[in-house]
Length: 144
Image (tube, rainbow, N blue to C red):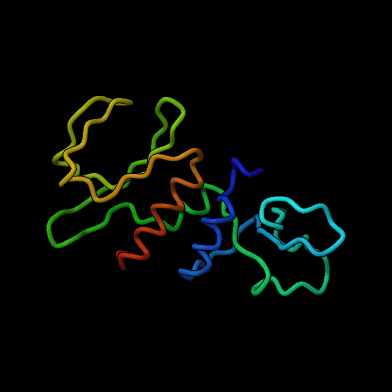
């Protein structure tokens, strides 16, 4: 499941920055007597944690890629440019970025970006983590 959702570190950051959209999966803390994995957290479907847990306090959202994608704007406007969202996979790496359309050069699956015409680019291991990194960046920079 970890390849389909955000990792625990990113999930904690999403919650810290105010992620509000309900997600299909959540990271829950593992209580005593249960096999401990991944910093004592377990990923499972929302609402499947043992009774009595305070979901808001004791859990972190673990969105899948489509849940994050729905929260990202198609375009972001800054004082200097208009940027359009792109997500692609090349050589096993997932890339999420906002690129200025008029300044894009390169070929499909082999893009070349002019750094001053690229709002931000994330190359990571899973699509959910790439999208989460972008959402976090936009939120931290008050672009969403």
